[in-house]
Length: 162
Image 1 (cartoon, one colour):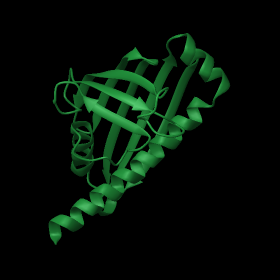
Image 2: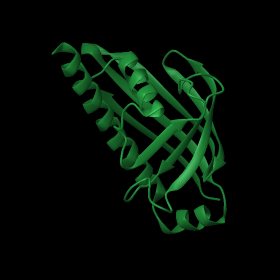
Image 3: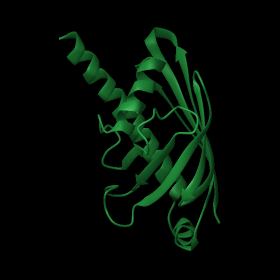
Image 4: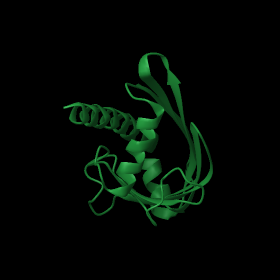
């Protein structure tokens, strides 16, 4: 087992409500701002911030998430309140928890923060974690995702105002 505690944060030109909707759209397949590195789907179509929702992820820190060998894991929402969603990693490559927070700041922006506290699960992921810098890859994927989300929100704003 290799343990991780990584915090990724970004300031987005978006409201917390737009961020929540962006996650819902991604998990329902209505957008692909996290592609090609991440594929994400809720199992039963519920919103990704609802308590009890199970979400499946495929992640590739290099290449595409739809390739063989991409990491797979599942999370379950254990607690949710406005601006804060807590999840547990219970199946697949990792075990642990994450806390995603959003906070409205000046000028219609949102500070988004993901606090990831996990450990590898399984022999293969344990070996890979000793050979690859999974922590750096995780942060890169999160930063690219936050930037992709912000672009998607801007595109939707422009489309709706046209």
